[in-house]
Amino acid sequence: MTFHIGAKPGEIAETVLLPGDPYRARWAAQKYLENPVLVNEVRGMLGYTGTWRGHRVTIHGSGMGMPSLSIYANELMKDYGAQTLIRIGSAGALQHHVKVRDVVLAQAASSLGNPSRSIFRELNFAPVADFGLLAAANVAAQKIGVPVHVGGIYSSDTFYDERPDLSEQLQRHGTLCVEMEAAELYHLAARYGRRALAVLTISDHILTHEALPADQRETSFGAMVEVALEAAFA
Image 1 (cartoon, rainbow, N blue to C red):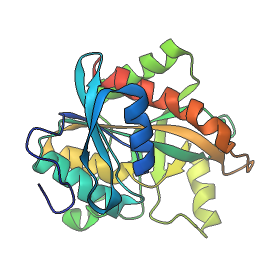
Image 2 (image 1 turned 180 degrees about the horizontal axis):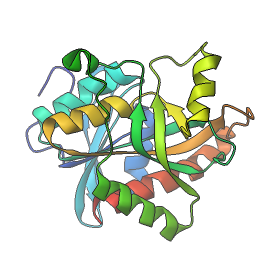
Image 3 (image 1 turned 90 degrees about the horizontal axis):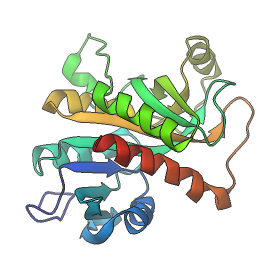
Image 4 (image 1 turned 180 degrees about the vertical axis):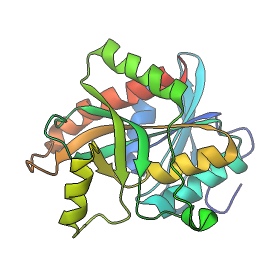
């Protein structure tokens, strides 16, 4: 057990999917895993371990924002030996060709600041995804027929952003979408020598203001989970 994860030794799989919402972790575990077992509920952050096609998988909530994800990812890697960590979450599109319901695979994640920034001081470290996972996820997305985009994203530390000038520059430089966790996950994976990837579903569009209706989110998010699982065990 750790401060934030109540799982016993051996109850966390080496492959962990990380949705921000703990209830989405429960939904994904019940839908995609065989015999999912609740292994953590400390502070309401749910984690389940089961199997997918014979492979052990843990699906564990990470909370919103990089500070929250940093806590869980640190403990999962350092204390429970997680080797492959894939963020599955929603994002807002920043480019016109990226549509609501599309999947984005984050090749790199820019940020203004994150919990790891103090380690590097003046260095702007560039956190990137594991290439093997990235390539496998791209193949998996095309296999199931979901529109997929690969490229840079922006991990914001604020949800209600009031920096239209920054959004304009991100769009100008080809940033595909904005979310709130991937940059810190990539920093930690590099630090611990683990594999990491963010597989994101576009739930809303920053430019057009289109948003995915609540009753259609489950189907669209399902494709993201399938892509993540296929990539983890390719």
